[in-house]
Image (cartoon, rainbow, N blue to C red):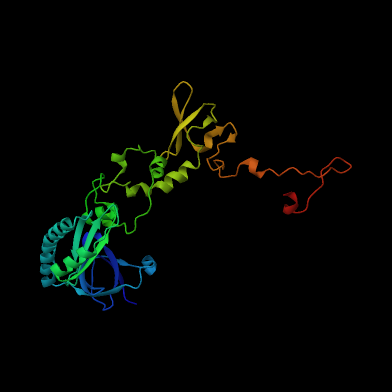
Length: 312
């Protein structure tokens, strides 16, 4: 079976392609690939070991060949002309007084299609705009509305961490993110600190949310009154997942810490917010059998039951 590769195009757009013609390829090669109508050009990102990553994307097209020196020169010229095309598109949009922001213009390598990416708060009727642009550029025009996160991906940039935006490097599909991810990690809910260049919550808030949640489930919830095995008591302020300890404040304002297995709550050994104890067992109250309403026998003993269904 032909090898499968991930190819990146302008604006961090990525697609899968088969090396159907068994070319000798290496990562970062510039390659010419099959497009919907014609040919396009992109950079070889990596070889895909399993086709399960494809999902419902459909059967990939083929890599036609490695780009030649002439192809590289043609690409540089195309990128220069795209900037001019974008300026003309913006002027035409202003002529029609359409409430849309032109983000980027991407031309297919063979010139058979021009894709215009834009953002808008509402639905835009651009039928007349498409007709004029098609007549002006003499090619097939496709307008594609994108969100602010896709806009940041296409334009590129660096995050507050100093690295390239995750959406420009490895993220292919955006997952939902909420402020609960920030709360779970005890991060300040300051929009300037937890928002990316797109103005939305940072994608990286999801990366360690699972580890934080797993660790915190071993402890009573913040605000719980606890007592340690050493006899110290106080209220849990927060959980330090790196040291796997609860930070506790006593009635005099002094702080101390304790691991999960060293905590006692008024109801018994440390319970988590899900009702499990620190050692993973279920709350004893949930294990109690329901009392029977059957009358006792002549010796005062309750009747014995044979099956689980009879006890319930």
